Structure formats: structure tokens, C-alpha cells
Image 1 (tube, rainbow, N blue to C red):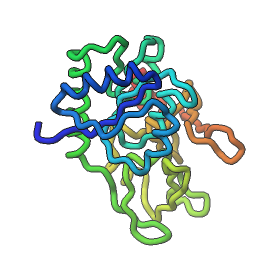
Image 2: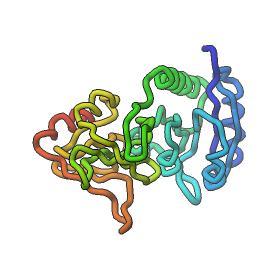
Image 3: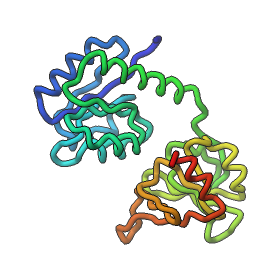
Length: 239
């Protein structure tokens, strides 16, 4: 391994944080950037931090590790927790690994190896597409996309919901063109007018998909899953 993963450590209990730091210092592939015992403080600092991986507890005061991880775009996350019941939720938000305490060095090393493999794969993969917008050309990064839908003003255009809640208007582009460029495992067409990012999905059933995104009325965005695209969607989410 020719590089190191820049890592943040988070645990609200200082003994646990100290022990985790001691283990991480024994793993050559890791560079510890900073340690935190307060998730709110980490969140406040996030824009100033250069890191690749967060190793975090889950049950903490203020904001729990799962909700914190959802706010981190394009970052790897490993959870270390005393509780087994959050495992499904952790993997739903694409966590690299889920370790139950007490953490052992060998188990942590295995998780770090998985994180490094994912990091190298993501680093070598195409990350964006260049498209025309109503304001000029843009580099649309795949990890920022939540939803792409037919524009209300002109069906030839597409409106993109971005991770920060803002919208971008793409000019004269077809869904087929977008689907050919988007990472197949990360995006799925759900009806004639919408493509959704798998990671943006909070809930779904046979007919509807609910996103994490909150609209102005403070309700989650709800989309229709049409019969035409249902089978492909269910295969994509491995149900």
C-alpha cells in the first residue's frame, strides 16, 4: 500500500476513544488526523478537515453515528459499537464495516483493509460527467446527485436535486444518455420521468420511494415506482 487513509476517530466515551486510538496507531495504513468525543463538534469542523475515513461509535448524545455518517459525502465509515441491532441500518448507508465492542486489533485491521480496497477503487473510477446547464457547462459529480427528473419547463431538460438540497437544470439531455454515464450500481430509473440515486433512498415499498431529502413543507420527497421499472429497481437494491 503506497498511501495512507486519513482517519477521524469519534467516541463520546474517552476510555473507548483512547483505546481505539491506541489500536489505530498500530495499523500502518492509517494516519489519524484528529480524535473527537463530541459528534456535534466534529460536524461543525467537517468543512475544515481533510480525511478519507471516519471510525465512529453509534449511540452518542446530540447526534448519533448513523445520522452523522449520512451527512458525510464521499467519505468511508466504519462503525465500532457495543450494540448489534444497528448493523442493518449501518449497511443501508453503505458503511464499510460494523465492529462490535470490545474492538480487537485483528478485526479492526480487517475493516481497514476493506476500507482501503474501496478507497482505491473509488479513486480510480470516473467520478463526474460534463453537461450543459442553463448557466453554462458544469462538472456534475455522481456522489452529489440525489435525483434527476424531467424539468417542468421543458421536457427535453432535466432537473437535478443535489446532496446540499440545491437544484441544477441540465439542458437538452436524454435519460438514456445519463444512464449510460452514471455508475450502474448507484442509480436506477424508477419511472418515465425520474432517476434516483440508491443512497438517497430512505424507505420504499412496491409502489413508492421516499428519499432522505426534506421539502419546504418539512416532508420527505416521495416518488412513484412504476411497474415498468419495478423489477430492475428491486434487483438493484438486492431485494
